[in-house]
Image (cartoon, rainbow, N blue to C red; front, side, top):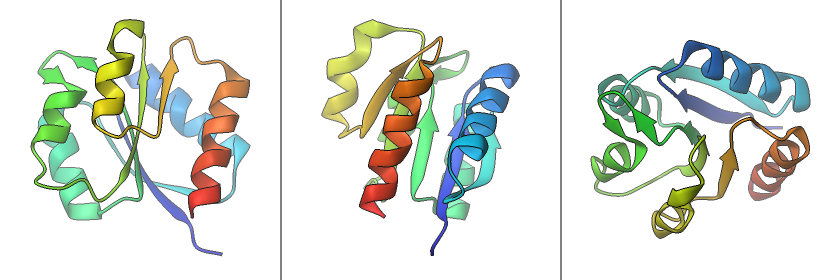
Length: 121
């Protein structure tokens, strides 16, 4: 069984830790290959590690998750937005987001998202 290579990009240390912990507790199929706290590091990490999925915050001090996605000529990974802002849902799906999870994270919704990703892989 292939692992689903995963990167988490969120400026808040606690949120990155929570997302990685939830993924680890809810599924053995995922492998967290990297975490980044800003757009620049997130871009470099995704370029270098070529993940299957990126869990991405929207608002960060150095820009938005949308700006990060625009840095790529082509998105070769699934995107799951994890954010405290519900007013960007439509924009997220313009980037073909696989899902949009609001903070605080609903555990059932998060598990459904992981199941959806597993089904694709």
